[in-house]
Amino acid sequence: MPEGKRKGLLVVISSPSGGGKTTVYRAILSRHPDYKYSVSATTRPPRTNERHGVDYFFLSDEEFDEKIKNGEFVEWAYVHGHRYGTLKKFVEESLASDEVLIFDLDVQGAAAMKAAYPDESVLIFLLPPSREELRQRLIHRGTDPIEVIEQRLKNAEQEIKRIPEYDYLVINDDLQQCIDRVDAIITAELCRPFRVLPVPGWGI
Image 1: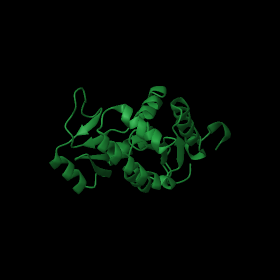
Image 2 (image 1 turned 90 degrees about the vertical axis):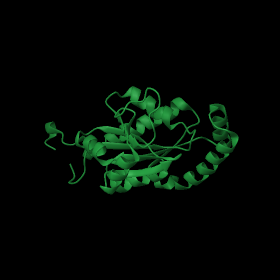
Image 3 (image 1 turned 135 degrees about the horizontal axis):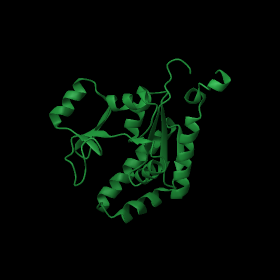
Image 4 (image 1 turned 120 degrees about the vertical axis):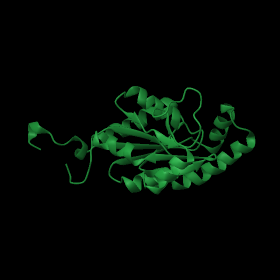
């Protein structure tokens, strides 16, 4: 194995709001029980049935501040008035166990992950086939007023400008095909020589 490279894989999936990333990563996790989902820390109060350490690490503002001060986050950001972050300890433990760890991150979080773990991370961006298709998906979701939907579309326009920073772009015009392609990307990344070696039968 090349010096300095670890076998663990950090799979970062991003998309505009309504782009399908939650559905896709949940499908991947259901196919591969050995893959893990990265549990983020947040200052948001727990919702019904959410469990600490399973859905999120629920922290007070003071606890979150302390972890920022101590450099314990790979990345963190404000989202809808609350803070969310990825804990270095969680990532390092996963890499030490050669695991596949899946992240749901925005473009800023993805960039931070790539900067911190350039060899171990792979960035995948999911994109609906058109702006109008994304608009219709957000409308049909029925969770946001029209002004929020329009803001999400404006945000999407900014996010897609950063697609060249990603390793892969998958158009989500057919959900099953999109899931299959993301699954294939992960499989291909796991076949990189530094993740497969050594092969004792060949003495390599």
